[in-house]
Image (tube, rainbow, N blue to C red; front, side, top):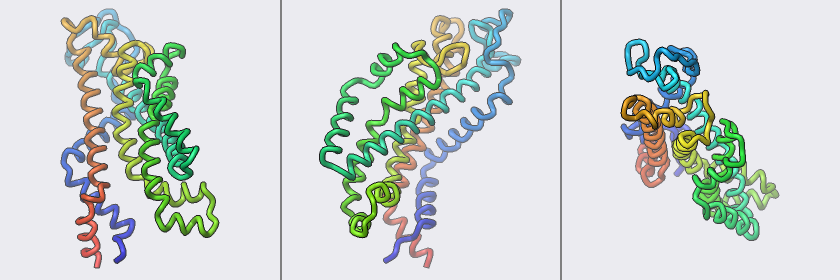
Length: 296
């Protein structure tokens, strides 16, 4: 019996995802955060980098909704601009990690043999070192900047994607459509990117979605330690760092950027879990049958 087709698959995915209320709420929050980040120059009431010595450590008020920092800068404006950095780091670093992981995992899973052994030993070598300490060691020799942070996080975060893609390719390369493609003389690159990879995209999408909050947390931690994006540019991590010495008298400096990190990471995790559940064939099997019956 024929399957429901691409449109039916999309309908089944959306129905499953939309029934997960937590995932939908997370998606709405993520969408709002993206809009706030894009419109930060319009929405920010003050210049995020302009100090004002007359308003140092002012509590939240009508003119400064989230208060001011030790230099008199508006915290709301800095949190809005910090969202741009955090989301950029999340998307770009995960994109770099996914690209490397997909290429190496596909090569290992499809070719096997020596290629597989080399890639897996490289993965094992990278996993020997705790990621955060590896980042600290690398950044100690590089000039901190947003591009450095995104690149380094991406270059140290591809191992999970590589192992996931390898496992998918090991399963799919024995399928009939791959064997048929090889029998008619299709090249390895065509088989990998045209036939196998599209069938392995679902777990990759889930891994990327769950990788974004991890990258945001990593950037915030590095900025908090002074190894991330350098002042005066605003990031959630260095706003927290600014408030570390004033936590007893200026609670807003740690509360609001901390809440921004919490809400962002939680929302992305909820979306990732929702996508994973919606793409799980064990959960979708009964719903696919329903769509087929409805389409008749």
